[in-house]
Amino acid sequence: MSANNGFIAFDKWVRLLSTLLEKPNNRIELKVIGESMAPTLLPGVTVTVKKCIHPAKVGDIIVYKKWDSNLTIHRIVRVDNNNGNYQYTTKGDGNYYIDDYTLLMNEVIGVVCL
Image (cartoon, rainbow, N blue to C red; front, side, top):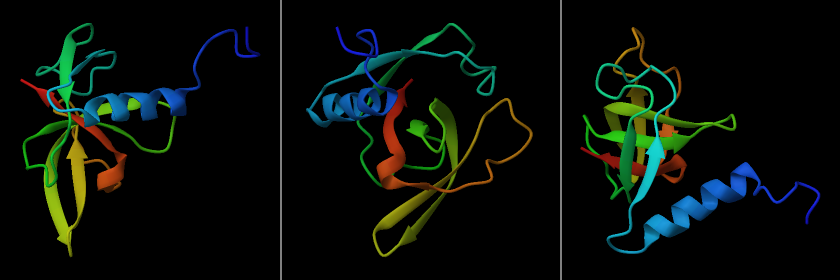
């Protein structure tokens, strides 16, 4: 067994999820942990995620990884197009504030199927 006791490193796990979603019609399921998307998505709910076809749209709920070692599920509130390089601004439905960062296309893992 490896030094990490058989657990896959988080970044490798995220890459694996992204790779799985590259295949047509593939879906993954993730369990919601936090409350930032309440009341739309409550903690404990399982969501189905599919590949994000860029550009995503305002109103889409996406799964992404930014700086830390967590996946985040938030809604797109703004889409900017910089010569085909789309950037997304997000907000949790239960949050009072818009996220203070912009996501690049390669940070988006998938879109939640509602």
